[in-house]
Image: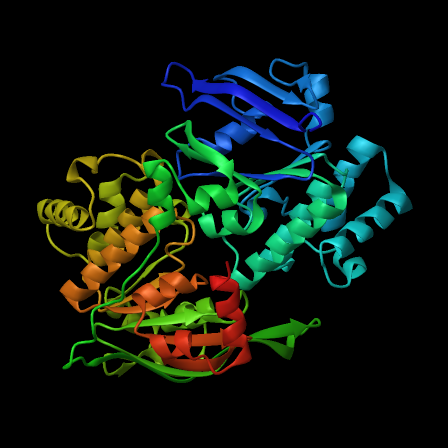
Length: 526
């Protein structure tokens, strides 16, 4: 066998005087091979990858060896590292919206790399950019050159990131959770695209993920990391078929299972929508006349009862979140929104305010939805203050009680969001919503950014809270396994329309529509 593209030997990383976060990690990547680094948040996966080209902060102490084509990179001069980074070794990160510059066009961002590493400018650079966009599956690439990141969908932005990573024909591609926030069908497309490009270009690839289904699908070999150490490695099929380490066995067994409690027999209707429509006007000209509409949601009707979970699934742009925002009265809509016997669609803001404590929401990214300048106590108690519930002492007691209920230690009251793990932050977000004792809780992708083991814990928590308080859930997700574990009924949406609706078992076991079958195939394929 020829020399590996990348050889990492006894790599250790320490920040300042803190304990080592990576300890004596070793692995190799051959040409054309995909090696997956898998483990929960905090296991050291991303730190290991960033160490290979010295992209860690200045206080990081890195020891061991990192050889790229037999050339040592640890301790190498900046000139060599600059030649390697983004050129011979490229990165794709988890969230393309934060990786792409919102002020620059797609053409300008890809052209920057071509100019820096290959000296391509002008018409030659543009021709190469169009070639790259076509290769990664961007429709009508010439028309996309002047687009900005916010004008593209999540899947399109990730394809742009892949185009940028491949611009200089790298020998090694490091993909750090590149599909976590994508819908199942888009995720499948991106994985197929990466595999095709890898075969065509002969690249080695390090694929970082917490999703073992992706590992099984895309990798040749897998390295399992826990608490900074590599606890198991080997051919992917061997590790999956015969895991040796207890932690690997735990990861393979992880995932949301089971089903919610049956809907109470005497359940009343909490929410009913009839002919709900969300159309955004397109205005042009000096007088800003409406010349058309972006049709986000068309004629949507559904009922949610006390103690019931209604799951909504569909690709990006299908209208899932627009439905939720309309129910919350955060965007304009037409049609009927009946909440506990009151049509709230026509209520003014002042009339709506008392009802807002009865309808709460938990967002996808707990770190982005929690203020970094507020303590846990301030975050969770904020709603109590807004609605003038209890004295200061009573509020503090309520915060302690709800933290305990969602599985957090009340001693953490004075801490800030950055001091918690992703799963703990999502528990804080749930506590903030639950402290007002709502009747309806909207959950917008609450588990997509979490590890499989943590996802299962959050689903168990939500089911327990629903059983105790007879909560109604409007649950939005692209993860159909989570939908099945938490939902009683499911709506399948596509381009603003409900294409299929029914009980969860009916939708999963006997889907009637081709689009539903496509979603299920993408979610459950081996």
